[in-house]
Length: 471
Image (tube, rainbow, N blue to C red; front, top):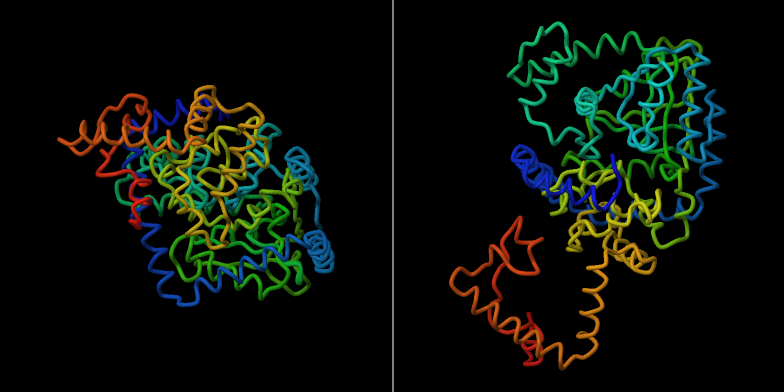
């Protein structure tokens, strides 16, 4: 995906004009947020749990080296091995070396955002190893040769017809036949993937948590594909970024109580799986070897800085569901692994503001992302920080810089600012009185191209404030 402001603007216009995508994105708001609201209201202590979860992650980040070392020691004690990767290249090389040492030709993969981040699939394919995604959404977008559109619902941009066409084109036994019933599609995907599970030499999963106390990795799924991925092959590789560490099992259970509720509106996900080491004497299933690849890839540079709070993220996707910008554009527009509000902070942090300077502007700063975040991450504050960096480094578009300079000139002269605002509001109010809104407004075409601009009503906010009127 091209990572540039030009590409973002081009893709945004395409997304807004894509009727099928817009229909699919409507389901996002109608389903995820409504479920999250019901789950939150059914748990009176939800906000207290958010505070506890935040405190756990803040404590862990303050002592991250201690807990990562403790995790490594516990993994070794249970017969596993931890590998450290400074960047994406090292992480890919470590996975490839493990695959080659085992003579692997096929690997099954559970859902893993860090695998997407380091471009693992194309790398393995280039070296003669076939990766097979086993999460249904990830499998669908692998067939479509597309990146995920959402953290937890990677194929949210696809509808039933589009999925049926992908299956017809890629499942030879269908002989081009289109399946219409969702249950039939699920059964067909299950049939195809079950064969791949049984043939895989290595299973690769992500990890929601790395438990320092026990050396366990934890995955949270709703399909059970993660269990089959790590239990059936003879080798299990878990990929995780450094901030996934947590001190104890009790800490994991606390965060789990806000994770599923924020992600899918469930009390708990269908499967929460703890893994530690390879198969032991007397055990009848499980992998013979267990490897954990822990990836930095720019995260250690975030520690102690303005964007450290982003490392509390547990990838629930709730901020994406609440974001009005993501809700109109979808995830592919962002041009990076992580989309929506969290991606607009994390991507510049990992890959540099020079390359990602357009992303912090992909927000209205309405604050809904922070309101719903189970880890109380101050995303709007960090978006403003990156916007400041954009301006200081001369990365903002000329029109934006000129506009801000002009606004600053007026805003620093309160009397002039109030007078101009009073005139502007009065003129717009009269012009828009008939319809109450503008479908086309000079200097605001970027807004009115996709939505209408309400006409001002009554006095300016400052006039009302001076008269003692309060909202």
